[in-house]
Structure formats: structure tokens, C-alpha cells
Image 1 (cartoon, rainbow, N blue to C red):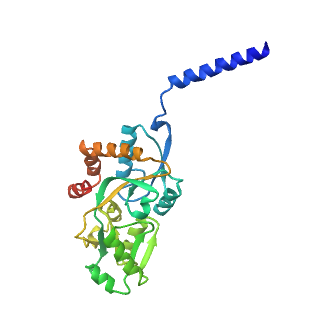
Image 2: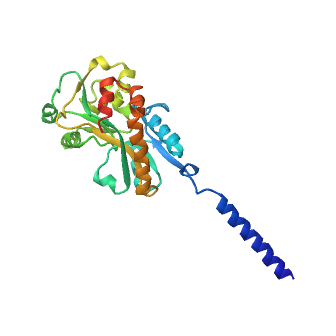
Image 3: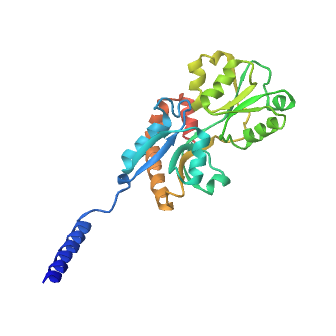
Length: 264
């Protein structure tokens, strides 16, 4: 009798679980929280606000995602993405090495410029020819083919200093005598304006032959499928089409820089 009772109770439990499972909708993306890492950098993200934060907020609202927002140095972000311990980050430049561990969904374009205090070096040829020239770059940053090659030429002369953040980069420029040049995109010019050094800095577009560099959401392959990437791209496409991206960019960039930013 006891065995029959136990079997009956187990049967009732199984039926109850089946009914619950049938009644419950499939798990939405929003029910799983994903870590998204931001790095301090001008109008992209600074003190908790910026273009990257606004874009991710909009994706969260439109796509039903749940995100945990983190702040990390750029170099650590790339290491964590590659290791699979970080699901997602922002404003990343795609290249073959990074394609091995991440998908990219473009949402903004930026043109790298050479920022120089004074008129010592007005051309890339002048900079490379000067064996004593020094430049600073953010550790872990890529700048596109033209500027990456320029960095390596100066590095061969021992003239490259790597710093952890965009803020440190502009501090080096602000010092006036520690570096001859830094590389920056308009979205980072906030640092220059906050330091009050705009009038002392010459901005050169040395890479005139190249189109603006496309930056995108970085989705670790350890956490996202190709279908997930398609879903994310649809959200970005809709934001571009309905003017949401332009509205976000316009909060931080000049009208000319907004048009360049949408050229991706």
C-alpha cells in the first residue's frame, strides 16, 4: 500500500512539473544577465555617461536584455573577452585576430587624428624621421592600418609609451614635453576640452586616404551565437534607420562629427 502511495505522489509531482513547464514561456534573453564592460574614454564613456552607455541602454530596452554594467581598463577587457569570462563590450575595432573569439556589430565610425602640441611635427614623415620623437598610446588600442604602422615605426626607435587609459593619454599630451604626438578620435576630444588645452593642440588628419574606422559592439563567441548577432544587428539597424543613433551622437559630437559617426 505504501509503495502504491509513493508512486501516486510521484505521479502527481511529475504531472505538476509538466503543467508548470508547459505554462511557463521560454526563457527570454532578458532573464539572463550579461556583463557588459565599459572603459573610460571621453564622449564614449566617462563617469557613467556617454555614447556607448546610451547605445547599450537602447539595446537593452528594445531587445529585452538584462545587463550588468562594469568598468575595466581596455587591455583587461580584451583579455577577458578572449578568455570567455566577459560576454560583451563596446566600441571595438574588428580584426582577424579578434575574429577568433568575438563577433562585431558596427554602430559608429570614427576618424583617428594626430594631436600635436606646437608645430614640431606637422607630418608623419617628420615624426618618423625624428629618432628622438616620442608618442603615447593606450595599451590594448588599435588605430587602423595607417596609424598602427606609424606606431610601430616609432616603437622601433624606442619612442612609444603605453598608458592605461584615455585620460592618461591626454595627461601626457598636456605635459607639453613628455610626448610629441598622440592619436585620438573626436569622441575622445572631451578630455582635451576638459583640460582646457584646445588652443594649444593642433589636430591633423594624416590618414586622408582611409575611411573612418568602424567600431562595434563586441560579443564574445563563448556567450553569443550567430543568431544572437543577427538579432543585435537588427536592433542597431533599426536605431540607425529611425534616427536614434543620430540623436545619441548629437548629444556629444559636433554636426560634422555626427555625420562621420554615421558613416559605417
